[in-house]
Structures are given as structure tokens and as C-alpha cells.
Image 1: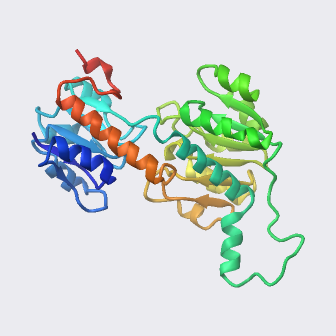
Image 2: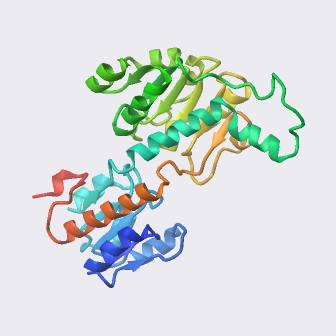
Image 3: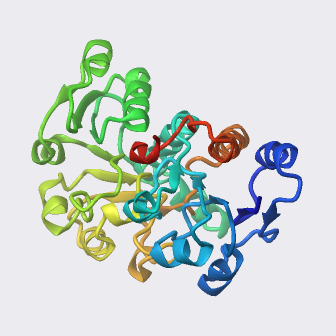
Length: 323
């Protein structure tokens, strides 16, 4: 069987694949394949282990051929895959939920503190040799304890971030499709509509998946609904935020700051954001801990092996294909 891995993944996942399919093929360079390379290398594959940077659409599925049985995505999200097209061809699609929950929530908190307390900005100042003495007005930031945290999308990661607010005595609001009794009973969180959340929150953290109804959920109007002293944090998906609108809002003081780990047109970042001191930007590293990335690789490999062996993968996204 031809098994193709689109990019280097942690050794823990490769070892699992190696035991089952010693001759699997892999892009051994630590880079994303070009479109031409991807179309060429997937030919005749029966299984693909893909990353969120790989656009697996009808063209790729056609290039692979009718023998393709499974696309195992090493990511929680799967908006990089045309699941409808895969389902129509009877191709299983899997993801890797759960194992990166805490790592991503922790990174969201790191971003929150970084922007609120101006950590990257002040570090750049020090490294540039500008720190001459302590001063009572030097890099004044915003308090976190006792403030209001707004969670947009209280799934696994959003809920984990909310729960981690307990040590800071925060008021927590959340917006989502369904009530979260655990959040309400354990930390007193309150379910509200998106507009109320934007108006009331000092920190707005995005954790919804990318869907047509969440594309640019943070746009000019949403930003104008927020407090001028509020901060936006995004560890979800880049296109949740209209980056041009955000850059304009940050430039003109509509909100105080933003911290982003994901971007609308990755790896490109809106040029205006790159110039702003009130924007903290990290290169899609929210799940980048050794433990989390290893578990993701292992889960993706196990999903792939189960699907090829005729077993139902644990994390099957398109249940319709399982008969």
C-alpha cells in the first residue's frame, strides 16, 4: 500500500507508521509542498497523512486516484479538506481532537498576558538598549485579575481556557450554540449572545471552528462593539478575523490590542499588523509542545492505520462513509 505523509511529523507518529507500513513515503523536508509537488506525490496513494497547511480538495483527490481510502489530518480542524468531496468518493477523513486542548488554551493565556502586560514590546525596548532606569510610567499595561473574559466558542479548547481563569477571579462570559453546565457551575460562567459578549468583555478569545457563518466573525462592526480598552486573542482560525479591519481598529484606538497565533492568509500576515506595537503575533504555535505534537502525530498515524485495516478510525469526521 502506498502511504504518503506530506511533511515531517514528530518521530512518535513516524515510528507507529513505520511498524505498520515500513515503506511509507514522506516529504522529508520541513516545508509545505508546492501545489505541483503535492499533486504529483499523492498519485496512487491509498492513504494520506496531511497537515492543515495542505489543501486537500477535489483536484488533489482526483490526482490521488480512486484507490484513496483515507485522509488522516494532523489537526483538530479540517477546513483544509473538502470533506464533502471526500465523502462523495467514500474516502474517510479523520482529525486529532483532544490531545492539544491544554497546550492551545495555555498559549491563548500566554498571548493574553503578553498583550495585556506589553511583554514583547517591553522586551524589544530593553534589547534595543533603551532601558536606562525604572520609571513609574514605563510600559503601563492592563490588569487581568478581576476582569471579564469572553470566550467565543466554548468547545474543548474554549472551555479549557475559561476554566484556567479561576486563579484570576475573572467574570466569564461565553457565546456558543449549546449551554455548558460545567462552566456555569464551576466558575459561574454565563452564556450570552455574541454582541453582549463583545460589549462586556475586557478580553475576547476566539475558539470557534472556521465555517461560512464564522468567517470574519470579527469584522469592523464587531470591533466597534468592543470596549476601547479591550483585547482580542485568536488561537482558532485566521479567517475568523478580518485582518484589514483589525489593523485599522488597532491603529485608530478602537480596541487596545490584539494577540494572534493564526492568520487570514497564512503564512502571510497583513502588513499593517506587522508594524503595530499593540499587536502580538506568533507563527501558529499554540499546540507546539513536545507532548501535544507527539500525541497529534500518533493519533493521526493510528487513525490512518485503522482505516486502511478496515477498522473504524477513532476520530472519523465523515461518519457517512462508514458502512
